[in-house]
Amino acid sequence: MSSVGQTQHTALHAHSPFELRVNLGGDVPESEVRAALRTGEMGFLHSFTTGSAVDGPGVRVVAWTSGCQFRCLYCHNPDTWTMTNGIPITISRATEELRKYRQGLKVMAGGFTLSGGEPLMQDRFAVKLLSAARAMGIHTALDTNGSLGARLTDSELEQIDLVLLDIKAWDPERHQKLTGMDIAPVLEFARRLAARKRPIWLRFVLVPGLTDDVETISNIAKFGASLGNIERVDVLPFHQMGRFKWSELKLDYALDAVQPPSPKVVADACDRFRAEGLNAF
Ligand code: SF4
Image (cartoon, rainbow, N blue to C red; front, side):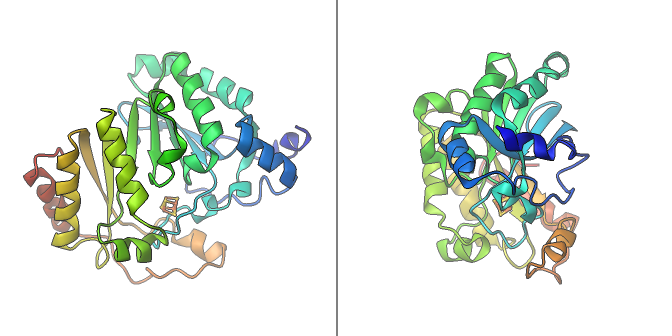
């Protein structure tokens, strides 16, 4: 596709997803964007990063997609909300990129994680890339807010070795306020993964004053324990590393005054998950 070459000056690789990237796919005609979404032959990526030890088991290569329908108040990558902020890339080039790491990932018992943004905004591209990774013998993980899980068929779920599933709140109203979206499809996806015995690492962002109350944590912990397929829980302390992006993008940031939770609050949250029999870190 002609427009793919236009952003070649922007490196596909980033040191971290905290690099601000905007409008890198802005020249792609609307018709090509629509075709990309329909076929998955092209996707939009914020970047590839290597060497992650926190996005699944072992050392991971992570592809960060652009496009997200949530608007989390604490989002640290709001540049990934808009799909065309990302670099347009053909599925064959993305696959070749991944192929470079194939041997190394095997040696390090690592794998490939597709994160975002929300990868399932580009569900056809996501399925193609995860399937290509799996065909190379690479362990695959999908990091998702879960709300678009219904876009994946049961056989497509089999291409994903692990789902890193965010549960951001429990009370539906609170979830709506925190993310702008309904919680029901997220929980439904979690239940479907459980029914199909697909492993989940549950991710929970601990935000003082928003998600650190006992009721929220206990309810999520009870729900997680009831599923039977949660291998671990990652309690992720809120931080301010993405604040500069909100300001660069001229977005209203509501959490300016919020401090990261103390180590004790994080430890207490982990204990609540452990009290329900879950492994929490
Ligand atoms: S789901 Fe992730 S990428 Fe989307 S708004 Fe929330 S934190 Fe940001």
